[in-house]
Image (cartoon, rainbow, N blue to C red; front, top):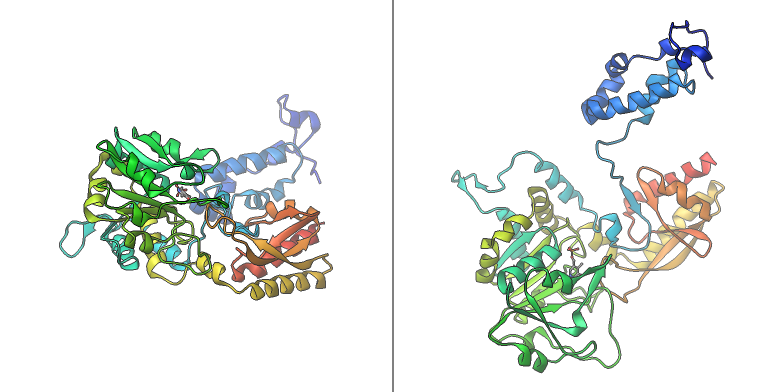
Length: 449
Ligand SMILES: *Cc1c(COP(=O)(O)O)cnc(C)c1O
C-alpha cells in the first residue's frame, strides 16, 4: 500500500506532482544507525549496506514501499555476504564439477583455513625466530603421504606445475610428448599449447593410438630438456593401442615428468585406471604433478613431488615466485592430508545401496508433503577431468522440471540436472548431512507456488 498524506514540498519533484510522501522516506543516517542494520554494516561494510539503503529508499520514493516498511526491506535486501559467490549444493551427479569449484573441503580443512586467515608462521620458524621454509608443514605432510617422494612443492594449480617444470627444465629446448597425449582439458584449454607457451619446443612422437618406448628413444637427443607423460584424464582410447610405461622412459638421460591430473596418492581400487603418485615415482618418474582439488579432495593447488634436486631447481626458478600457493591453500592442503577422509573420498567410497536409500528417503518425505517425487537409480560420473568412462552407481530424486529454476535461485543454490522431462537431484556428490537441507529447499519451492 502507498501511504498518503505527506506534506507537499515546494519543488517540482515527482513526489509533489503525485502527492507522495517524499519527506517521510527514512533518512540514510537514521537507517544506518538502526541496530539491526548497524550489525550488518559491521559484517558487510558501510558501502555495500549504503548501496542497498539507496535502492530501497528509491522504491519508497517511487511509492512502491511504505516508509515504515523501509528498515525491514533494507534488512531483507542486504546480501548474505560481502562477496557475491554463492554456495551450491552439487546434486548434478558429477562428483567433481569444475564449474562448481571441484572438491568441497573437509571440516578440518575449513578450520585450518579459518585459523590461517590472520598473520601466521607461513615462512617463519617460531622455534628459532628465523626465516623458515614456506608451508613447511604442508610439504612434510605431502612427503609423509607419499614416502617415495624425496621432496614436494606446491603451486597455484596443476597447469602452473606443468608450466613451472617445462620452463625450468626445458625452456628453449625440446619436450618429448606422445601424440596420444596431446590433450584438451576443458574450455579450450590445451596442454600442448600451455607447454609451448613456456618457450619449450614440443617434439611429438608416436601416433594417436600407438606410441612405444622406441619412439621416445629415437626422439631424445642433446636438445631434449624433458619427457612429459600426460594422463588422458577426460577420454579413453580403446581398440588397437600401445603406450610406453614410465618405467620404459627412464635411463634416457632426460628427466621424466608424469602429469597425473587427478591427484591419487596411492592406487584406488574403485578407479583402477587412474594413475597415482606413489606408483609413478616408484616406476622412475623424476617428477609427478597433479591437481589438489580433484580426487585428493583438497583446495585448488598444483602439487609437484619427486627428486629433491629437480624440485630445488624449480623452486629457485624466478617463475616459482609467480606461481606459488598462498597460506590459505597450504593450510587447507595440509589438513586435507593429515585430517579425516575428505568429502570426495567419502562420497566415492559410499555404497551404491546407500545412495539409493537416501534418494528413496528424500522422495518419500517430499511425497508425504504432496510433491510429485520419485527415487530412481542413476549413472554418476567422477568428472573434473578424472576417471573417464567410469560410471558410479548412484540415485536421483525426480521432480517436475519446473523445480529446477527456483532451486538454482536459492542460497545455497541446489543444482540438479534436467533430463528426460524432469529435474533430477542426484545424491552422489551431496553430503548426506545436506539431505535435509535439499528436502527443505524443495519444500520451500513447493510452498511458494
Ligand atoms: C585437470 C588436469 C590439468 C589441469 O589442472 P588444473 O589444476 O585445473 O590446472 C592438467 N593436466 C591433467 C592431466 C589434468 O587432468
